View (spheres, helix red, strand yellow):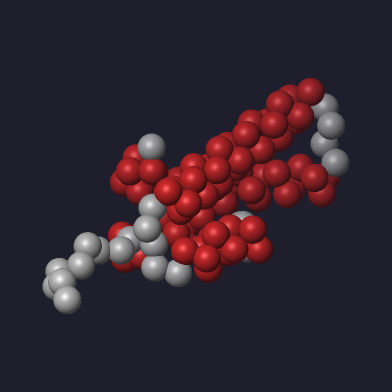
Length: 100
């Protein structure tokens, strides 16, 4: 699943920020009608699913600065998943080329 997200990272980044902006605007306008509520729930489900997939990928893979990435998911949750998708290949640890 993360490979699919990584392949289309620009599209998912745009969708992530559109969904979060939509959720924010709906909270500000306090829209509680049924169609607005359904859209709000869809946005929350998309954001939560995206966030959980990225967090699980961080936990299951060997990364440089793993603690930083996991903590950033909690403290800057609106930015960390997207930045991680763009930096994922560089943060994965390569197998040791030289053995000592």
